[in-house]
Image 1 (spheres, rainbow, N blue to C red):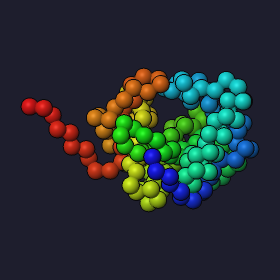
Image 2 (cartoon, rainbow, N blue to C red):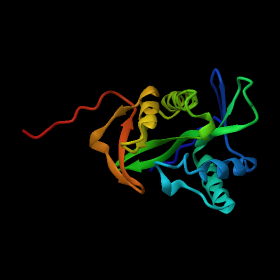
Image 3 (cartoon, rainbow, N blue to C red):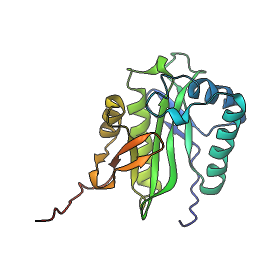
Image 4 (cartoon, one colour):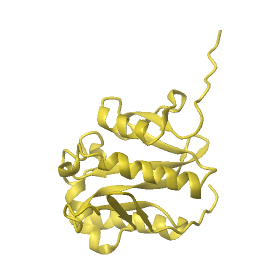
Length: 188
C-alpha cells in the first residue's frame, strides 16, 4: 500500500459540518460506540470502556497523520444542536483482497437516525474521495440485513460488487463500491 498524503480536515454540507476528530471527541466516540443500537450490525465495534475509545481515537489520529484524511466528526450546522456530535463518517485506506480501497464508515447516534444525516455525510465523503484520492475506489462493507446502511451506500453512489463480498469480523460483508458498474463474467 503506497503512502498517500492529502490534507482536508473539514467538509461542509447544507446541514452538516464534518471535521477531523480531536481528543475532546473521545467522550462522543465512547458514547456512540457503546450504544448497542449503533453497533447492532457490527458488534465487534462496541466499546465497553473509555480507554477503548481513547485507543480508537488514537488509531483514527494516526491514520490522519499518515494520510491526511480519515474519519470526520459530524455536527449539525442547521441550528438543531450544532455543538452536539451526531456521529462519524469518513474513509480509511485499507486492502480488500488485492486492491487498495477507501473503506467508508458512517456511524450515527441513534437520535440522529431517519433524518438523512448519514446519507448527506456519506455522499459528501464519497465526493471528497473522488476528488482527492481518485485512484482508490470507495467501498462500504454492509451486513446483508442492514437495510438502512444499504440505502445509505446506494444513495451515496456506491454499487453492489458481489464478486468482492467477504467475511468480516461480524459475518458476511456485502461490498458496495464506487465507480462504473462491475461486469462479472460467469463460467459457461
